[in-house]
Image: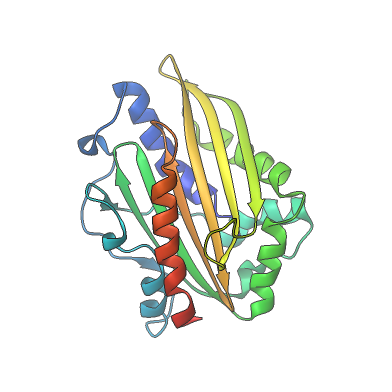
Length: 239
């Protein structure tokens, strides 16, 4: 279920820009801001369903702009280290279709993903993995290895922290887990923290993820709550 490496490049670009500028502004987003089509691997019949789940421009406050989704690694390879660490089946091979999109404002990035699988058992396997007692240590290990591989010369990884909270936690019933992370590294003579919150949702044969990151401060709890509620409300109609 985790999809981490695919996000690291885009998040890192935002963080390094914040380091070099000593701050951030919407004009400083290190992407070409434009209307970007949703990236999917779905057959045409499935694409509208997946696009209807992921975060929509109207879900976000003013100032958030569509940006290109960070380049992805093959998802099976992306999940493999986590699955091996957990000792659970990697359901990536059973994915039938997937859609992604991404938005940014200043040093904050939001990426959402929706996927359909061959069976509900695939989704249950992913849920079991992310809610496993091993998940925090495995995520920390995987994230540390992935970020170490993408940091540019002159940047040094200092610490990685990943905390998993299984269940909805008072949020929508479709939420199966929330992962809060902090990645601390040194760059351009400064120590920077990239804060993240990943919310995992599941319904039948469907999975969705909403990934919030901010290189200029904490992730907004109000934004997380609002966006996740909107995504969760769209799951049942296509499950």
